[in-house]
Amino acid sequence: MGRYGLNAVRARNERNGPDTEQGHDEVDNVMSKLARPASPVPVRNKKNIRRNSHDINTEYSEDDSDENDELYASANATFQQSDARSSRNVSQDTPEQRRINTSANQQTRSHSQLRQKLPKEKETTSCQFLLQMLLMLLTAGIAVFYIGYYPSEPTKMNSIYDKISFYSDIMDLGEKYKVKDTSILQVRTGVATIFEKQDTGSFIFAYNSKSNSFNPTLFNSFVEDLAATASRFLRNDSDNLYAVVDTVKLKMQTEKEFMNKYEEAVARTGVMLVKDVDNVPSEIAMAFHYYCDEYSPLVRRSAIFFTLNLAKCSNNSDPKSTHEYIEKCLAKKWSNVGEDRIGPLLTRVVNIVVDVTSVI
Image (cartoon, rainbow, N blue to C red):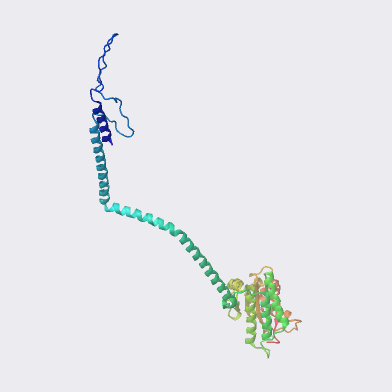
């Protein structure tokens, strides 16, 4: 394009020529005018201003065209060299750089995949949670059904032993051993009162070893079953047996020793069975004053069972009742206790008398 413009300018210059605008002198009558010198410069003296192009001069037009070609070639070469250097730089990257680039690309892909997986994972987690809850509910339902219809023996043993069950079992024992209802009712009412008032009470089971109908095995079994039933009701625990005191084998010398030996057992089981109380020496007898104290017992909510052989009581007088007979019998046995203390002691020990001499 530049060449096209320069050629047009040259053609115009050749057509105009140097003589075209040559000035000449004219003579007139008034005055002579100086001839206007001819201009050696072309008609267009102003620079041709063209948008987005170089200035065009007659003298330097050819050089400018050459420079344009050189600039274009130089720019193209520079771009090619830069591209070549970039290619060399990529090919000459160290293994560490390539590893870093690869790691970055992998992380980018991992993040993208993770974002895509999150909704699916949330759905999977929700489904798993629902399945787990359903399984837990199903398992709990089966367990409840199994326990309700097939209770194990420990479950039965640990169930609450209420008053109704206690009453029923006591009456069953009366029928089993052919004991009068009045005697059985005494035991049932006395133990229930101890449970309600949280105090203590004593029971004397009188028998006669010289009676023709006496059966020692049957009598011991009857008393032991009553003690076990009372212990279960007072402590609601069938695992702990009642405390048994064998008076024939007593080795304690003082009431304090006796109290310390059996206090923990009575507190745990709720019942103490003292066999043949008439064999207890006077030095230990006062211990029962504290065990059988209804107002301030040594162990609360406890029942003290005694057995007494009336055949060992030598009383020439004719007592009006079995209760009075037993008091006089024990008063003789414990004569060393002292008159001031024997009365309160007998009141506490001889509380409820269960006479089975005519039955067992």
